[in-house]
Figure 1 (cartoon, rainbow, N blue to C red):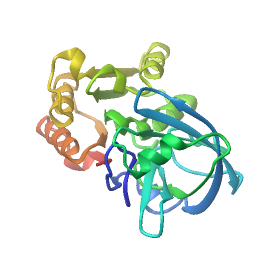
Figure 2: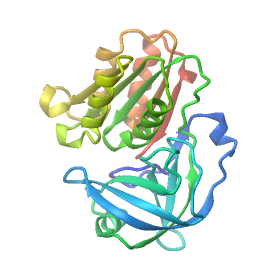
Figure 3: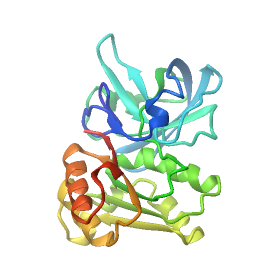
Length: 260
């Protein structure tokens, strides 16, 4: 869950991103939409998914990695990343951390099949450019995995053949949403290197910025030819970017999505 301009997060983040020129140029135009809840699933104690079936329009075009904005009154909105892929244009899957207990968390917890949901989207520019010849490195902190899950699922569903690395940090294994899915991808596609790290299991730093930066330092030895996509808290993004730049990656090769 995010706030105005924000991405999905467990706090009330502002959504800001630095990514593909295609999305920033507005090729996929945002619009007001209406949907109805098909299903709600609990991925863990505090992470929920909701499937929204489009009613108006009956289908929505978007790029993997984008998000939608849901209004809670004239001056309050929350933003949620789309976890599903663009191939599913009639049903969008949103995913949120509902631990904070705020307005958006209470709303998401209360969702049930049949509820109407109005939103604006798609929004955001955290979109992988498939024509980019560089090797993609994805780095996620907890709920920051949601747009990356959409991107990765689409890539492998459409025959992507280049090496991909995902470094995924969480405070404990229960916060590694989609972990089983990524492990399955790694078994099926030898070019996909999945590197999950849970602080409680690894005995490493227990805060996101330090923990994920340490993981990237340890798990990404070579940055030659890389383009990095980092999603999580602002401090985490800065720390991870600093690590990658210190290893020799051009600062402009680090794209980011700030969740809080």
